[in-house]
Amino acid sequence: MDQADTVEQGLSRTRKRERGGGRDGRRAGQGTTPPHRTAPYIIRNIPTYDVMGEENLLKIEATADRILAEVGIEFRDDDVALSHWKAAGANVDGLLVRFEPGMLREILKSAPASFTQHARNPANSVEIGGKSVVFAPAYGSPFVMDQDTGRRYGTIEDFRNFIKLAQSSPWLHHSGGTICEPVDVPVNKRHLDMVYAHLKYSDRCFMGSVTAENRAEESIEMARIVFGRDFVDQNCVILGNVNVNSPLVWDGTMTNALRAYTRANQAAIIVPFILGGAMGPVTSAGAIAQALAETMAGCALTQLERKGAPVIFGNFLSSMSLRSGSPTFGTPEPAVGSMVIGQLARRLNLPLRCAGNFSNSKLPDAQAMNEGTMSMLSAVHSGANFILHSAGFLDGLLSMSYEKFVMDADFCGALHSYLAGVVVDDNSLALGAFREVGVGKHFLGCAHTMENYQTAFWDSQIADNEPYEKWEAAGRTDAATRANARWKQMLADYQAPAMDEATDEALIEYVERTKAAQTDAWY
Image (cartoon, rainbow, N blue to C red):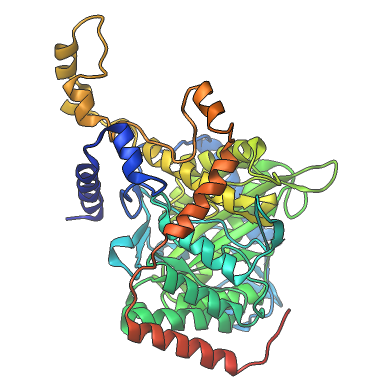
């Protein structure tokens, strides 16, 4: 039995559990508790959207090859990376490395097209690649905001709260990584608290630190305590998200972290962050060519460190206001560009991380949802397998919003149905319903409707679909206000997944011992 069959069986069992009770009864039974989680990840049942033809794809690939061969990429503060490139036959001149056309594509042939990231709870393991789609929370914000207290620096309590919210959502599949920066913990020690929080408060897959090589190694070591050293050596259990210093620079902080994950057989996500007009050309085609060159180089480096190690082809295209120089998010040009990136990643046969729920809005308002929907749909149609920034992203990624988090998670629920496509079988064609109802009558009470009403349509936990008068009598609340009440109830209802006591004690001992071995550093 393959993974798709397992997921489908899980869906079938869930549908059976949820039958009975009517809409009002189901609402009363659920209260503010989310519906049963349908699957550990999504199996795409709609095609990807190829926006660019073969001729123009070849032009972009040729431009990327010329950038790599004629301009090159610098690898700073990492002599091992330079040695790898020399041994592979690249032209290494000091820190600058140039690559003959086709060289990186040949190296990348050893990278797997898909792989499993194993979760602490095996039922929550995810497949990354192929037709799978995995939603993970937003990543990296120094600030946190909610309707009650406004915008403030993130804390370790906020960090734990967002892990609990992700664990509680049936529509997210992954615990994520640095959901927000806990700035109340020293910089050189916070990764220990963050990884422990992921392991303690969630039993889903997670990401580790990349801010220094030793922090990456310590993140992996904590995973070994939970999963076992031999298992980790043979299986992916933790991801590391590394960024290019665009344009055309890989710095040692990132490549050392990249190699730490790779030599442990853990997956690195290779991500250029190109702000058009600043870190790359203002034109989309040029920025895409640059992104392809930078990402291929990072992905290929993983294969030189450990052939066959899992790696994810990542991308983050963004635009900017050319009047002010401010970054802009959720705009149409990067959205279309992301779909082209998807085509290029498929031609390399690599798993893809691309786009997400981006917004530059400072509140969870109409702008936030407009921009987020634009960019999130581009992620879905690009064929992205791992979608970071699926929930919570506001303020150009400077702020993580509690309200936006649950609003976005709700939208991810809609995308589960969207990605499922249209099922065509005897039940869905509903010929028996036509025979029962006949001409000119309604389908509300027919047997087919009663048999399918609980699973026919996605049911939002945030949207208000009541008549205007009922909405007005209930207090005229907007979506953000309803989301405020929802995240509070989710935290109140949260129950931590079970963890073996000896494992928990070993993790705590490792964290305390590692912290004690170094003085606090706040930079």
